[in-house]
Image 1 (cartoon, helix red, strand yellow):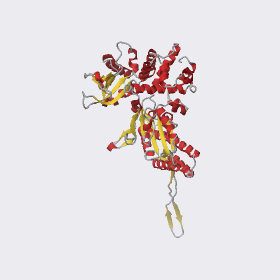
Image 2 (image 1 turned 90 degrees about the vertical axis):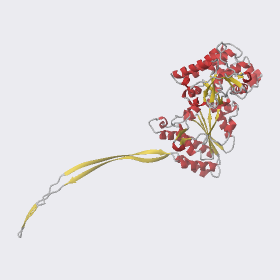
Image 3 (image 1 turned 60 degrees about the vertical axis):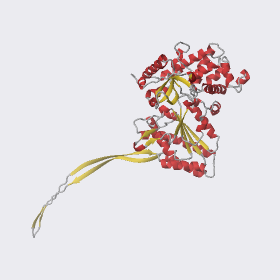
Image 4 (image 1 turned 45 degrees about the vertical axis):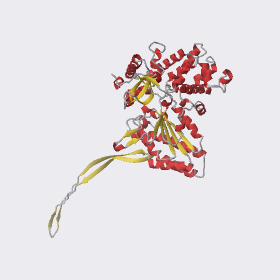
Length: 522
């Protein structure tokens, strides 16, 4: 199978990013439900968290497709990476208000054209009024006003003085009149500066009113799906959130779904007296969904392996001619596919562990291992090839994104956890999860969160987060005497305080608690 040219082409054509896939039917056909989509299919405003490559875009595109199937739903899908038609958006010399307004105008424009196309394709008895409301909405989103900042005026002043004198003689009297005349002119200038500039303004009450009107007249509900929120500059994010809250949240016909990276998001600026700019998380918008929580291999290895086998099978099958695997290889299930292309099922489990719950990493490591095996003339993929592919990917992707300080701190963690304790998991106090180093290492996918808020009986009252080191940090130690304990230990066999039991099924890991000191740069 590995030497089959058609299958080789299919593997090479797999899109590593859902946003690169133009055909929505392929996105739909390769989607595997794990329990997230049902929690998004509602009228609640929600934020979906997840690191790069965990499948957020795939989930949102599947949601978009599901919403389109229901009558009365209209979807505006926005990718934050492609916003910013005006140069004001990135001009840091301008105020945040002006930069944010420029960005928000792009979003309103996308909404305008989405509704316009719907009205054209779905006329009804209220169409004329709906078009009028839509145009008023468009005007309210970009109102130009003239604002006078200063005045500049030039005036010329002329002055004149006269003196006259005369002598009059008459038969009856002699009279002397002094009146003589002379004149002198002087010019003076007075300059006052002034200027008038154009300013754009967003009328939030009007936007809300006319957007509500057009949706009521068209009898549709609008879903605004915003992907890649984290690509918006951090300083702009809370102000953009405030614009969303003012324009969309009061309208029951509008639902907002946002996908972002948790540690690259800034939705709120607290103000005095419990006021704030942006979203009040948990109140204005729900934040209870995190894709990473669903793909932790250590929580349920068997289930995650089954899900990932189906994901991989569907991605390859979608790039092959119809029923190609079934006709040529009698393969119609993910299980049969895994048994055929890997030397044994444990090898695939090693691939799943190496991906650390990140679907994109699974596909990339598989692709590297597949073509390495093909180049070496093998008929299937073995464990050694998976390990080497995982090492290559770690060095080319994850390690390259760490600066010198992060590299040194990661080395200290590895030396302590793997070198000294021969483990791959550790705990930190819950309050350290916001530490800049923890956030960066987690975001770079070299640390993986296994469990939040674990209560250790040895330290009652203190909550911990349990993390594991990435497969790539110890891949060179596999099958050597320095290999760490990879699999969790059956808790029923543990009677010492050296271990903790973080999972419901009594599986244990070593009690390794790291302090803040190890995360601080020297």
